[in-house]
Length: 94
Image 1: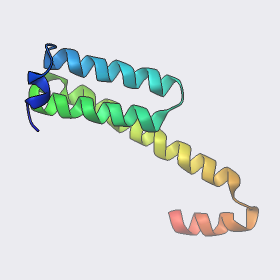
Image 2: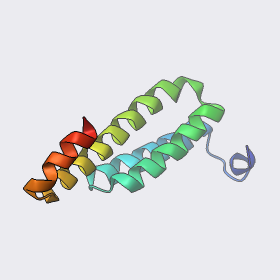
Image 3: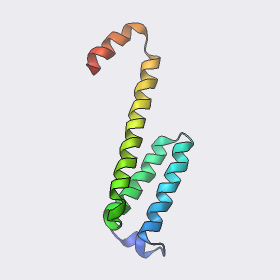
């Protein structure tokens, strides 16, 4: 696939990256973190291929988003556990 998608569009790689990045931010603010992460992964791929100056920013953004997603999942899971299951969780997470 490579650069084929760039040939069909007139936007620069940086513009495409910024569009995906901004779209992901809107989704994240709406609470749709899974969808946002998908868009940020596309933006990261564009950065890796064509906009190397944005790679550190994309790494930070994705790292924080993934950390938040895991933390949110863990918090929600713990909230649903019954008290007798908490001991198992503590032993598992160690």
